[in-house]
Amino acid sequence: MGNKQEILAQYEGNRTEFADVALARPYPEIFTDNNSLPIKNFGTQFASIIEPYVDEIQNQLSDPTNVLIRQFYDNKVVRVTLKDNAIINPIVNYFEELFGRRANKILVNRGYPSTVPSYQSLDECDQNNYWLSQFWHIDNFPNESLSLGIYLNDVDIGGGQFEHITNPNYYFYNRFTEGRSLSRISNLILDQDDIVPIVGPKFTVFAFVANFIHRGTFSRDTMRDFIRIRFD
Ligand SMILES: [Fe+2]
Image (cartoon, rainbow, N blue to C red):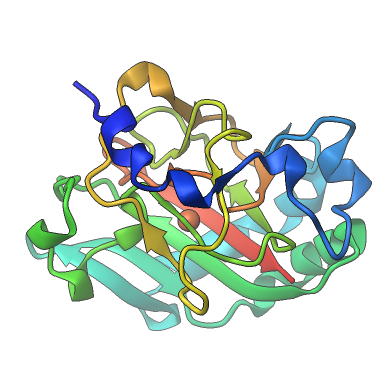
């Protein structure tokens, strides 16, 4: 059983309708596209931009000298990140131009299938060896910031899918604490029908304003390679 009502009541003072957010700079038209949701799934329409680089990205992710290990579990690697993102410069440049914004944070990740527990509470995990983005949270970035997610392989349920709450326009929040990069919604448990998973074939691209309730999920069945770009 979920506890959405009880937990989210505590955050009601910070909640705002995404459609009512006042912006110093408007979002690019390709993102808003006449609707006012904080997430837009572009599907595979940018596949030809990404495809030329995917083999080399995946070669680099497979080479232990090119990656930082971010998490271990049971003596196995859970997640790695490329040390040098130069390989994706052409992809970053393309989206910088498309959005009219500068990228300010780039991550190229691989999640290996893992049995690491999906904890519900921060108290249960070692915060130095755990992926905190798997807790429900908002990123607590300025609302002007746009983020982009790119799947480099097919992602289905159990494949490390990104997930968000239903009606993300409603469950959108002003920054909880100035200066913090991430705010966990501690102990929130959502029923399955309150969760929207983002699944799709490789080269699926989605853009979002990360202050609605969302999370990453661990890869369980298949490896997941993922590009995350945050724009100013
Ligand atoms: Fe996040």
